Image (cartoon, rainbow, N blue to C red):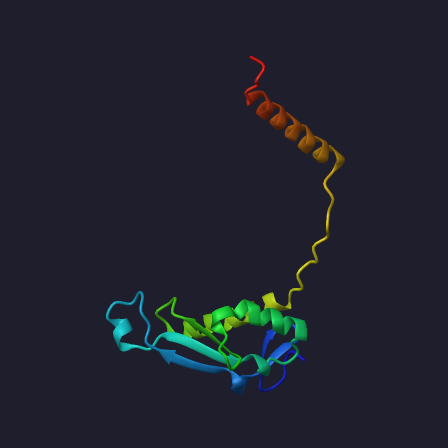
Length: 145
């Protein structure tokens, strides 16, 4: 399943049709001097979340959460990269960002186990409360005088 023609592997068992990855190059800010005014080196990647093959339902939900503001109302994930002056390097980096996003979505979070405070911690807390109560009780004005 790894080397399927016309498919790009994003993570183990997760593929996307290569033609569904919409890359575009746009003008970028940042380093590069006058070069950035002339060249389109910022890489932008658009891919529909529905086009990801092999992603479980739960992982899709996690992917939507992880994508956050990078997910459009149409369910398209938009990623961009303008870290380097090279359009090719930015192209590779933005694809790697998508892979990382999908890998994070695949990771199943560990369920939290409820724990109980230890007997010692309960006793220490109650002793501290008693000390605080005694201290405050000592501050009161007694009408005995």
